[in-house]
Amino acid sequence: MLVLLILLENVFPPIPSEIILPLAGFLVFEGEMTFVEAIVAATTGSVAGAAVLYALGRHGGRPLLLRYGRVLRLDDRRLDRADDWFDRHGPKIVFLGRMLPGVRSIVSVPAGLSEMRVPVFVALTALGSALWNGALIGAGWALGSRWEEVGEVVGPLTLPVSVTVTVLSVGYAVLRIRQTRTE
Image (tube, rainbow, N blue to C red; front, side, top):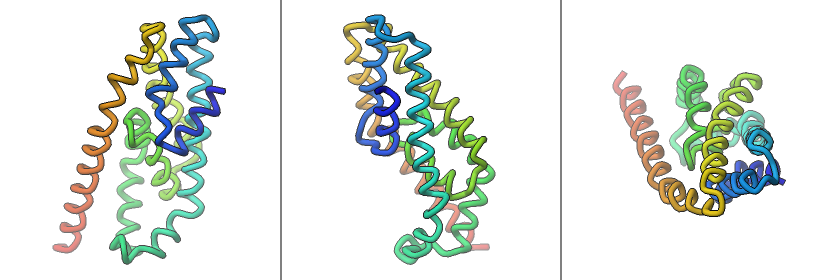
């Protein structure tokens, strides 16, 4: 069940891992599963959900972006540059992005779009997800019957982290676009 919930959480981000994973930690506390079983199940779900979004980016992303590129001010040249940037920094983005609320799911799409090698994507996704999952499951386990407190602490951080990452990404993109126009 945990595999399915985390898979859905990855594909439909409004389902919060910040609630699901501490609850799994409570189940570890209650002896319903082991800590390792919980991490393996959650990480399996994370990788499966990320694979769905990766496939969407890889098999439908570029044509869709180019079709609506005028609205997004994208063309082949700009998309190629973004692709090159992701090719250089993608592994860091995928690994670290798996541990950032609000970024966890969407990072799979540009990885697919840039055709990151599947074994690399899966390995980085599994490692980053295992760390995130382990932290939240461990927190739920440590708090026992007070597992909801994890969501109360982590949940409010989701919006500020998401906004910060979005603002920084847009700011970086704007700077890069301005630099390319002056070249």
